[in-house]
Length: 239
Image (cartoon, rainbow, N blue to C red; front, side, top):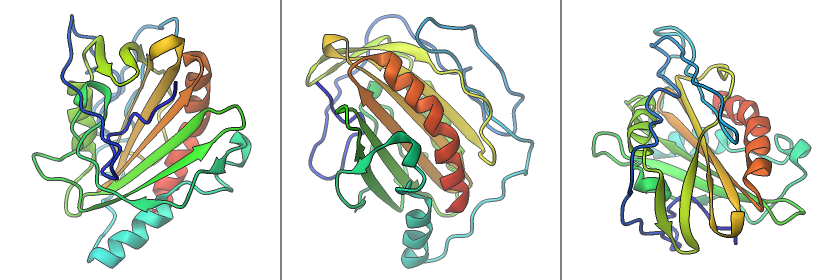
């Protein structure tokens, strides 16, 4: 059974009651651009991510006014040309949405208690029935890398309850440093009936993109998130 791993503000909210067990620590798997990259050990289903760049290499994207922010976000959304190699089709047009948290460990998407000023959510479908979801949000006057840091701290539980059963984290995903981003983080998890999903977070200046791929097995989702990561980074640079 597939489901969205992003808690949507459009009415399909997933309430996560918390995490249990010993930490599945992702704190060192993906760094801010102003830290030295690190690489964790390999994992049978997923490994680590690293941050990129040097201090000041990615300047915040100037955002002024709600219309300017909306235009910037729309440019950063994945489009049909971006995803041509994935063979997906849109489930519908992108919709405005500001999401408070991810489903995974109820990881917050606010920045020091401040929600995103605006956001968009889009969903794409594979012929196999797998799905790709993107959430893109803007935090004017701030750096979205702080959101990635907060999610990294929160996504440390080995499992969490979901509507389709208990989901278990499979560990971080090993990705090369993505060009032009301040911070990155990715991990995979197993759902009910051996279904799997992988989630990617990228931050550039005040922009945050979250991509989640749901598949029948975790290995397929992991392979897809690795393919999509540089595409999502390029779209974020376009924003």
